[in-house]
Amino acid sequence: MSGVDGVELQTLELRLDGGVARVTFDHPPVNVFDAALQADLEAALEQIEARPEVRVVVFQSANPDFFIAHYDVGDILAEETGALRAAAGSFNRLMSRIRDGERVTIGKVRGAARGGGCEFLLALDLRFASLERARFGFPEVALGILAAGGGTQRLPATIGRARALEMLLGGDDLTAEVAERYGLVNRAVPEGELDELVNRLAGRIASYQPEVVAITKLAASSAADGPGQTGFALEALLLDVLKSAPAARRRMARFLDAGAQTVAGERRFQGLLEALGEEPEA
Image (tube, rainbow, N blue to C red; front, side):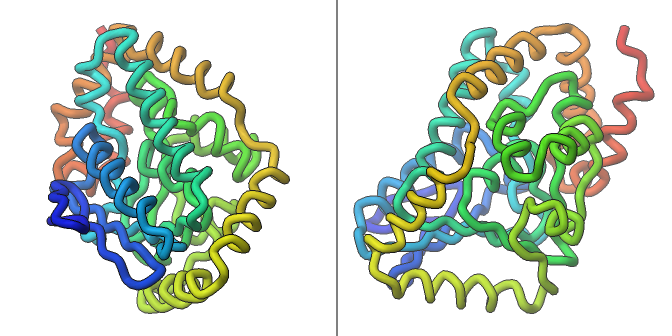
């Protein structure tokens, strides 16, 4: 896979189409968000930000079953106390960079976007989903941790506290239809209409004066009461504390041992989570 100017990328592909940049996640088997994907995403953003002609960035997946499955649970288990807090901070800085940038960002969602994948989507300006394929969820509490990539901060700001707690604590996937009703996505459309909808909108926005688009985005962002840095720091601290608990470590290890982050395992994702509650903690 490649970016532009000969830059090699391992987990995603970057293509430029006039004023629209298209970032396609392709990180088998299930597009987990890990250090490699984050490094490639940062490299792609560098290339995009160096091109003033790019007005819109569309994020999509090469795998129709998984947009971004979730953050790499193995990475969370492997991180030492303190280092995990730094990793969460790095993830949130990247999400803020995307959210606060001048370019309009669009998520075109097919497949599952859970945990860190859903947190990534919350950092984007616009989100559109396939009615047949898209699913959204937060499995962290079932694993003994919490959604510390902005989930406890951006999700309530997007869909409201009660619905956010339903997602954060319930652990069930939301269908695209319910996600649209909750306000998590702008629109959920039939699979065959998704590409046309996003392409048409991205092309239209890219045709406008860039300074007008950037100022409009800035004005709309400043009008919303978004999460503060204190909240991000708190959730990162709490993740560090929770992750160190033996029960959380056992749950995450069992999650991986049961087949998580494989195609077969992720396709029975809810069953993996339910099995965690059935096994003894000791």
